Image (cartoon, rainbow, N blue to C red; front, side):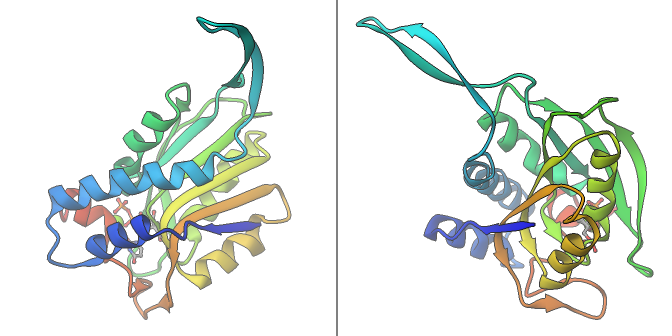
Length: 211
Ligand SMILES: O=P(O)(O)OC[C@H]1O[C@H](OP(=O)(O)OP(=O)(O)O)[C@H](O)[C@@H]1O
Ligand SMILES: O=c1cc[nH]c(=O)[nH]1
Ligand SMILES: [Mg+2]
């Protein structure tokens, strides 16, 4: 498994504002949207492309286009929805699948309440988006869905990861496929409630309110 940390002052600045507990929800949503476009730049570095001839006003040349079949972007609801628009803005050709998953805050186990994915992901490059990789339980389950449908090239785009979560994902799925995790930062640890420290709190609640 590869972990790529988007080490850039613009990312660090936006992340600092995002972490601040006084940042209100509208600003939080806007920053998540901006951050994901910066992470998408790293995450799509190896997106499959094909060359096709184009005619500029001056000459004929080869243009580079994102290849078919188009990449599949899969936000993990709820919090992953906050990253969807930024991803599709950067890769408009992408198709979108959906996974609704929630972590039980007592047991920390993830359960799935919605699943809308293509039937066959053989040969598809898949991009899971979810701001938080904490214990890794949610991401492991999400990657399992994609691998079971035939995907072998999966990139997770997250804002924050805990070292424990990265290790859990590597142990669970690293040997089954090419998995890349792109993050804005790897934080220190998890606390006793399974929250990322220092983190930014509950990403879903900060995006959409406490429900
Ligand atoms: O790595 P894990 O320990 O599994 O935790 C990470 C998950 O927790 C959060 O979602 P949550 O379950 O709070 O759902 P929400 O997006 O609806 O708030 C987050 O967006 C991840 O999906
Ligand atoms: O810190 C955390 C851990 C899990 N989910 C979140 O939204 N935040
Ligand atoms: Mg939540």
